[in-house]
Length: 231
Image (cartoon, rainbow, N blue to C red; front, top):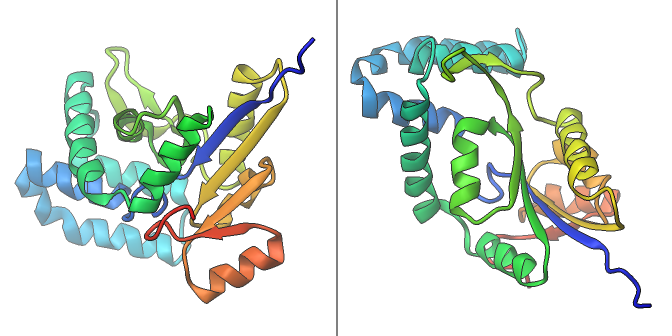
């Protein structure tokens, strides 16, 4: 009897990993300019929210809903959300995926890895980015839904970041890879993903700064520069 091969899963962060630029504020500004340019007048209020968050007057769980409500409104109808997400994904994926990320995604797919995007970005647009890149699944920050299916600014659960992201990834693994051994690769640009790295057999810290290289060496992680490639 042949030995059963382990299930292979490759976990990718989104912002500054699969895409060069963070998406949250960019999405809000892009959507506001596209749909209701008068909301540009609200930029000072958005800046004030960002300053309050930077000063740690409140956390992401409060900042994100407030910013979404300010720039997108109190709800986002399903058709509107789908259109915005698809158009935003088409815009960013065509411009902002570094060559190394493209190569790693292609390599992992060719080697039989299931591709899981794990991100703190809102799922209503992050899901479209994952789909455009051919990912198999995504865990992202969930938002509440109205009775008619509209997306609401309020979070549904915790922000998918740090320990919460690792918990959500574990939940996904339990549901999708519980019947066999699993080999996991994980890629992220930020040490906040250390809890997810702890689940992985191969942990790749994305970047090229000396600080990141030193941190990776201390933690036993590998380093990779997505502007160059997977090596």
